[in-house]
Structures are given as C-alpha cells and as structure tokens.
Length: 584
Image (tube, rainbow, N blue to C red; front, side, top):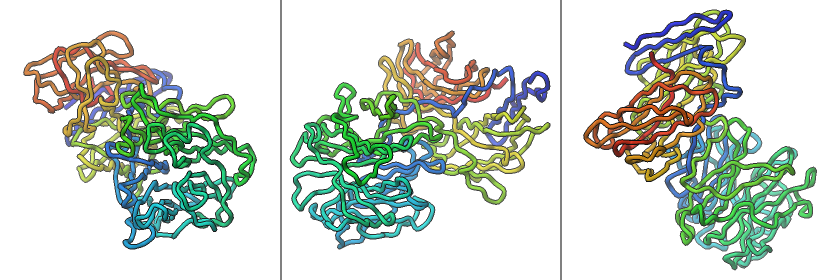
C-alpha cells in the first residue's frame, strides 16, 4: 500500500493535500497544493504533439466536422460506400469506423462514390456525395440526411442535388451565410470533360437548389492548369473568420504532384451569388514541398480546435512524387491569419514534424458526457492495447470539505475518489492511474463527486509523436500503446524529445516511462526536463516488445515543458510517457 500524504485545507496559506489509494490494481493521486505553484495562466489541456498522417489507411478527399467533443471524418472510401470515422482528437488512428450508407445496385448513383462531405446544417447531419452508374459523364451530386442526431447512425437518401442544367457535378457542399443556404460544387459547363469550374447556387433547404447556378471561378491560371487537360477547379471548402467568407479550392491535376490549394475571398457584406465580389489569389496558398516529401496537397477541409480558438486545414497529400491517386492520406496543420484578415496555410509539413496539438485537445468535457442512472459516462476512449494510463480529473469544489465519489472503468469494480475543497472557485485537479482495455473504453463517475467534475483527460504522450533525433526511428509495433514506438540506440544526447507538455501547476510530478530493454542486462538512459539537470534512469532487462514502466520524480513548471530522452547505454524501444502526481 502506498503511503498517503495528507495536508490541510487552505487557510491563509494553502498547504499540501495528497491522498493515494490503491484499489483493484489502479491508483489515485491527488493534490491541492500552493507549494505546487500558481496555476498556469490558461491551462487548456495536457498538450503534446502529433504527426501526420491522421490515419494509417488512405483517406483521400477528407471532410471533417468537430461537434460535442468529437471529430467526425468522411472521405472517399474505395468509391463504394460512405464511411464515417469518430475520434476524440484529430488523430484518427484509433478512431471508431463505420460504413453508414451503401448505395443500392442498378441506379444512377451506384458507382464511383467520390468525396463525401459531412456537414451539420440547420440542426441536422447531412452527407453530400458524387456518384454515377459506372460512366464518369453521369457523375452528379446527391444528399443523405441523418435519421437521428447521431452522425454515425442511419441515413436517409434525399435524392439528387441539382440546378436546372443538370450537368456533371462533384465535390458539392453547403454554405450557410447570413441565414441563407447556398450550394457550391465543381462542374462542367457542358457535356465534355474540358475543364471543371466552381459554381454556386441558392438553396431552399439543405438538399434542394432553388435558382440558377453562377460561375464563380474557372481554371485560368498557369498553376491551375498544370497536368491538364482537363483543367481543374475542385475540392471546394468553406472557411469563415470574423464575418468574412473564404472558399478554398484545389487546382491542377489531382493525379499529379502539382495539385495545390487556391482561395477565393468574398468581399465583406457582399452577396455570395455576385461573382464579381469574389477575389481570387494569383498563387496557391499551399503547394507541394519536395524537401518535406509532400506532393499533391489538396482537396482540403477546415475545422476548429476543440476550444474554438484555432482554425485548422486538413488536406490529403502523398509522400511520393509519382504516387498519383495512390497513397493519399489526410494531414493537418494550423492556419495563421495576417494583419489583413487573410489566411496563410503555409508549406505542407513532413511526416516527421512533431506538430503541437490543436488547442484544447484531450480535454473531454462533462457537458458532452452521457448521463444515465446517476452516472456521468465518458465514452469513446480508445486504446490499442491493454494498458494503465494517467487520467486527470478537472473539478470544482468551493465548499469546506472534500467531496467523495466513485470512478469505474468499463464494467470493473468502482473505486473511491476524493475531491478536496478549492478556494474562490478555482479548478482543482486529481490524477488517477487506471487500466484501459484494448478497444473503446468508458470511464464512469458516480456519487456527489461526479457532479463536481467538469472534464477529464487521458494524459499520455506517445513516443512516436515526439521529436525523434539522431539515429532514432519510428517503428511499427502491435504491442505498443499507439501501435508504434520510437527506437533509440546508444547515444545521442537527445534521441527523443517530448515538447509542449502542459501541467496545471508547477511543482513535483511523476513521469511514467514505458520502455522495452531487450539487451539482456540492466542499462541506463538519461531524462532531462527543460534543458536542466540530467537524471540517470535504470531500465531493467526484459523481453523485446515487453514494455515495463519506470517512474521518475521530476519538477515541472506551470505551462509548457520539454522532456528529452537520450544517452542510452543500449537499444531501447520507447512506447509512451505519462505524467501523474508524484508519489511519496
């Protein structure tokens, strides 16, 4: 049994309060301690980094929506059906996946289902897709409407979405602007595949066009015409900021590395149906970067960070100059905004770049949890393997005494939690070490304490998403927490660096480092926090792909921290790094 540290409730000065409980194979560590330091100015999740691509499977033509604590993505899935993926984060590698609609055989929309677009319009979920009967010239746009509030549930086919010309059409989506609806798509002027233009038309409802189409843009710039004919405008996506409306589109042949993303900007206050009010950038805002090994970036979507403070572009690209339509996978990066209110997408980032996660990632709010039978249930918590992980509870308790409750993972026996009082409405934090099973998990809270919890986090930093230096490399490993590891060898000083590690308060913490050491003998590696003193960590000998946790006491500052691993005496496979409260 781990010994508990007990402190007093805050009076003039807040003293330490720590409780450690071991029950059923998991541990609760909690603190409420002014000696831990002042809270971070704006603690907004444990942070960390991720890397492109967003999924291990091909995900061309991605479309993503963030709503009520989940990201939903659809994409061209072999051209045979409509699949939706659901994820707590922008990383879809462990996402729930479901084919939500299969086309009936023998119709004009039975084949070549391209670029489904998932949208939440006027309080309902819709998916727009292009399809034909096996003849490309017959491609048209169609709409599905969700039968329930669940975007992973059943959909009803609503029919073709067309204007009076009924010409070839793909890549359609709805623009909601000033309480009016518009349909935007890529189409032919006539019946011959010469070029694809960008069109817009008014709508009377989310699946009915109610007026003539208007030509907004055609591929008349050199970069748009690369790889043609045919010449391309397609993959339209809508971006809004401070009342402004932007329309991104992809130009150049999608089968070439020249595929790039351009932009149309609507003048403030203008009518979207007035083509003269849209301004076109002369150069693409994103194009291939051979040095980064990214080719054909295009057919993008836009989505916000979980807290709504950032805008992100998600696009597909390949890693080979001659991949063509193969190996197209979704990737993401944050959008920057200039002083004129224009977006900057930047060059596409390499698959080795460690990218800071979107703001607010990993904070799963109680308002999005399922409430049933007196419990607050956080569902859809994925794990690739059976593991033990740090969970951080956010809570509010401005009373004079601790509030108690119970925490249960899946159907396991519940264990007690205690939430000490906080001062002046401050948010309190409790770290818990709990087991997760491979697959989708549910964490349930009950009792009085459950009503005080405002959010939870799974505090894990996967090694494959850290900055990998020297001769270290990422490797696939089905026994690892995220299905991959970072393999480091003897030296260098900094073989692996975990950046953007956020904690709510500065002070003493525990680092739980999962390492496999198959060298046959105990060996050391170094751990350095924020470039300071080096800690030597002994890793016991074990079997290949047998990841044993080693716990190291460290001091972290409020806000962002960096933890580097290096100076290894043997070859190690690093699985993950968790942060928890220090145990004494």
